[in-house]
Length: 491
Picture 1 (spheres, rainbow, N blue to C red):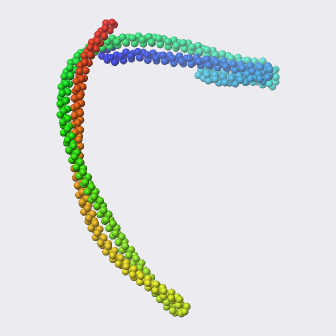
Picture 2: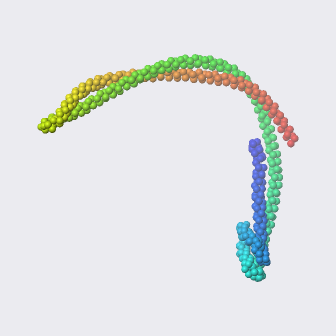
Picture 3: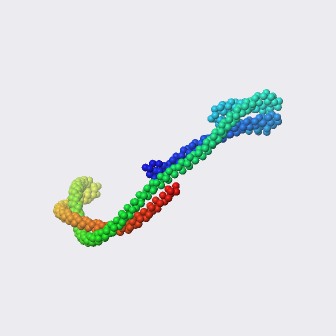
């Protein structure tokens, strides 16, 4: 193997070659196993085919036995073998067609066999029918003609040819199975031996190469251990100086942390005062806003009063129109009552009662007219008072609107004050946050310096441990060199 290969590559190459041999061996073994399995299946099928042919002849002989017994005795119970054999012949013939479906020669013979079987069964049926209808002599005459014997001889000949063909195939398949088994055994034996020899050779080569390379590596380790020991000694000295410097820096940072905390506390007090001022400004702003809302409510109510008074004036005008109609009706009623009184006087004694009623109606019309005039007077007074109230209300609404504008200006001033105070409080909070961040940063610096000091102390301890490890590594490398040299000399 090349010297430029790494240890891992050499080991991988040492395992890869036997692995390839095992894969090749497995591939050949698999092929041989598949071939042997196929041959075994073919042998099994051949036995099934031979069994099927024997069963077919047995079923056909059974029909012949049933026919012979019935012809001799004439009793129907002797026909049971005939019926079962006839059914078995049909079944076995179908199974033979399925078994020999992939063999064209046997399939052709099955084709020749089927009409002969049908002719044989037909001859048996005719013999049985003749025995049943005409007696023993008629059945014997059919048997003596020899047609059934000739057909049966042809059937047995075809079956014998099919069996001979199957025996030939069976012999060939057994031979193939033995050859496949022998081939598989040879592959397994010789392949295993070759794999063992190659693994041993590769292991020897890899072991020698690794021994030489490990020896060279151990020499480098010895020299590196010596250098590491010298560096560790120097590192111990530097770590001690680093511990002293880190301790001094840590003390200075602690003082800065204390100062930062004092600044943070002062900024926090300023923020607290700014927050209280902002809260008070917000309270004044809320009070002004409440007063502004109250004035706005008064203004809306004054507007509603004006609307109601204007509506009252419109209703008074409508009532006036109605009173005009009532006055007109009263005058018309009075005129009608006067005319009725005149007519009643002209009617004499019969119209006197009607005259009394007309007089009462005229009086009622006079009272309605007087009441309408009184109501008109009252409505005029209400309209005058409403107009006066509307004017006064409009003046009050203008005054309320002016007060609302002034309160709005005051509210705007308070809002600006709140914004200014809020900006001041926000600036104070930012100052407080900055000081807290500065204090936190200083604490983190102090913690980092403490960690540096701890790391420096641990580095000092680690350097001492590294020095001890370097010394032990130098001793172990010497032991490893002696061990490799002893193995090389023994090899």
